Length: 286
Image (cartoon, rainbow, N blue to C red; front, side, top):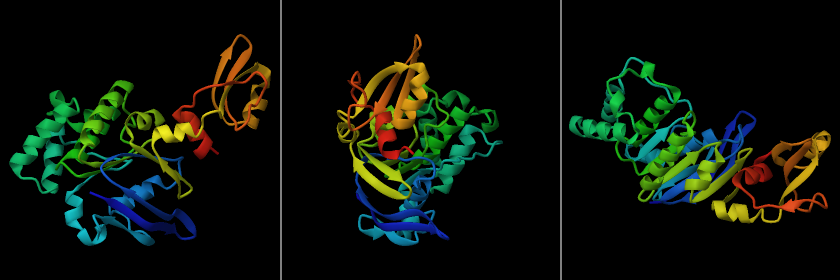
C-alpha cells in the first residue's frame, strides 16, 4: 500500500497554508512534527479527503483519493484535533453508531465495539454517558472510533492530547502493533512519542516540508551541536537570547543551560548527546 502526495498546495486567499508538498508513505508510523500554524491539520485533512487542495493530488496505490470517494473512506480511520462526542450517548452506543455509519453489520459493529473498549481500557464504562468522561477518556474514545472498521490508513491529529503518561505509553504500544500492516500518520507536539514509535518523522514549517528522516538520522545531524554550559544565573537571559536553549536547570546560583550551536559556545561547554527536543528547537524553533 502506497499513499503519494504530488505537488499539493493549499491557499486561503493570499495565505499559503501548504506549499507544493510531495512525498510517499508506505506501511509504518510516520510522525508529523511542526509548530502551531505550520500546516499540519491542513495537510492531514487533505490526506483524509476532507479538504480539496488548491493544486496537486493525493494518490492511493496510483488512484486519486477524490475519485475513490467512499471506497477510500472505508479504508480510512481519522481522528481530528477537535474531536467531539454526543454527550448523551453511552460509550457503547457511540461506537455502535459510528460503526454503523462506517457500514459495519450490527454483529460486526458490536464485536469491534467490545474489542476496542477493552483495548482502550474503557470496558467498565461501556454503559456510562460520554458527558461524564474525563478529557483523557474522551480522547481514548476518539482513538477507538478511528480504529472501527480495521482501517488500512490511520490519520491521527494530536491523539495523545489529554492522556496521562501511562495512557500515552499504552497508546504507543497499541500503535506499534497496529502499524505492522497499516499506514499511520501521527501528529503530536510530544516529541518523545515520535521518538518512541515513528519509523520516520516529517518536519513541517510554514507549509513547507523541511525533511523526512528517521528519528535516529535527525538526531545524528545534531551530533556535536548540543552543549551543556554552566553560567551565573544573572547571565542566563543573555545566553538564551544568543543561542537556542532547550533546557535550563538552576543550581546554587548558577544556571545549567542546554544550548544548540554549530560551534562550542564557551570554553567550558561540554558536548552532550542530542534529544528530540533539541532537534525540534534546531529545525522548527522560532
